[in-house]
Length: 467
Image (cartoon, rainbow, N blue to C red; front, side, top):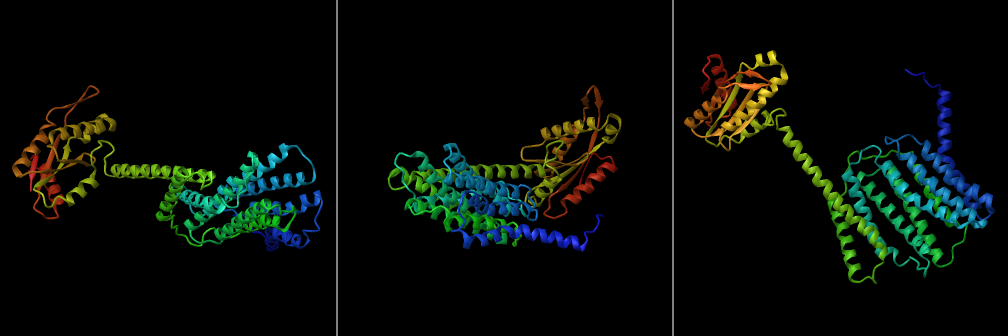
């Protein structure tokens, strides 16, 4: 056992954690009334970006969640945005090469995939998401993004004549915001209510709204560098960092994504693609990205579901199959007996005679090969429709239709299959079989009567005994 931490140490550690947790919001609260007086390159670089850096540290040092990658990836997302902000701030004061501006844009864009992955892991840290659940959340997120891109973004997006780079950036940011927002909300809904999920949703919503307002002000030439709007991003990061200090799930039961939402998302995406093909002028072409992504994920989901269904079917077959002989096993035979009551037929139990000395003399590997050949001989002697099962060890069972005369002929045929020896690796091996027959009379003791008949045949060396 470890040495107990003194009370003073516990208080000190708790105080350090509170300092880490509340540093970012304190810096932000202090800055807000002073933002107009904070001017100059170094002040902007240090003071403004210190909130994002403090949020990053808060995410990293928050209580660890089950998924070890959740906090580092979320912190990298905030760090990527911070790098973009530092470079953008520098270029506002100093003329720098275009490569610096490109790096700033790339850092801002890198925030989205990192945030998408990191925050999803934060939400689901207490419960492991299956691949199918991740795809479901993605379909809903992209489907809602397609709808929002078509009707909400189109009116506010600017048009830059001939400037492909500016057009791309003006479109990709709001679309990425919408995808991130829809994906996070759909993941939160899938897991049920949690304080962490609620705070993450609020933080991402605030980040997206700030991006939209920034875009709108840029369109109307009213944006001012260092305005109060810039602090919307910082407040979003403070809320996202705070979410890491709260439980991931209040509701332990995952509801999953409703099939109705998935169907609507796929239907809307397909419809919008069709309308875009019919009349390209009425819908923005950039909806192709989330729409095609939604349909592609829908096909992936179908493939995953079919593969899982096939896998489940295979597992069920294996659960009722004997691994050595690949015959049905005891579980399968018992299940079939339950539906055999209304049929004319019999249950035969077969126990091999002289098999134990085979294992003792030649080893279990040779014994297993004998059992496999016995299964083949029995299978060839049975009529179509009969069920042959290995019940374990050297015992087999047969369900067969027919009257008592037919069944007796089948039993004698089965016994006759072992009248000649097995030749395995140059060894001549002889064994016999004792067979107990229980004719079906509608009672529930078919297996018990067949077992008694088989032991009677074995004890009395009858070969075949019927009860």
